[in-house]
Length: 332
Image (tube, rainbow, N blue to C red; front, side):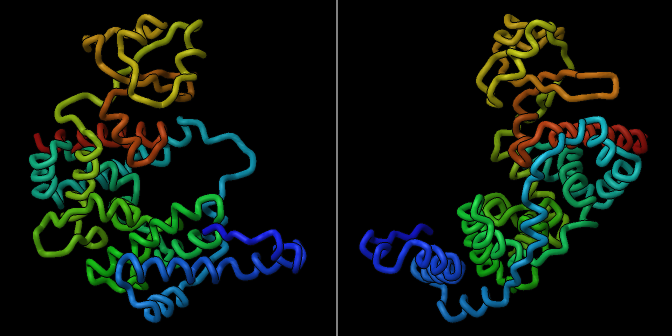
């Protein structure tokens, strides 16, 4: 939180001394204010929360992991794809589906989200629970809330939600592990997402997305539903673009505010049978043969609400498609 000092105070001690003072004490002061806010707003005990946060370890490896590289081109789609679309992950998805068929069927009935997309999210995020992260969530959130200025406000909010969810669910905050950013469980929910979208899908009185696949399945499906998933609607359709229109169409904001008819009038070569009023996005990704284009529909946009990356959403879509093909093929 920002501090305000009077001009007279600055002049009295000298600017350099003030900056030194602020740098040395900003961590403790900010953390103390955070604790005070938790006491005032949520009824936490000051001494207990102070003792808890004192046990958090600030880790430079977390800051290094979350800091964007200074240079370097992003991995092209055809290389990124190989990480997630492979036999091991497809077969693992089929096995996860078979082991949790009843929960997946019920999630599809309740939320309208096909089983293969729920499975694919869990497969991409944690390899079906095999890699849910090795950092203590408390360490990650304290490190980023008080030692990563560019996103400190966001992570202070996530730390607040984490402390609330562990209190609500009666979980020891020191016991939970997750990613370097504090994402948790089979579906890698941030604490705010947990509080907003996690569900007790097996009705045992707890929302357990760490060791209970049923709750994790219901929670992922609920997340999609709450973000606007449309039942029995397509995700995306392959298309082409007139060369002279590519630059204009690809420079548009990533928003669902233009219709298929508008895209067709402005250079999209679309041969499907969707109504012209259908809203969508133009997606381009690098294949080994060159650029390929898709018209992303509402459900594609919903997947990007889970992770705001076209490559991520395409990986989920293609993994889901391949898992479903193998799963239903084995069923016959």
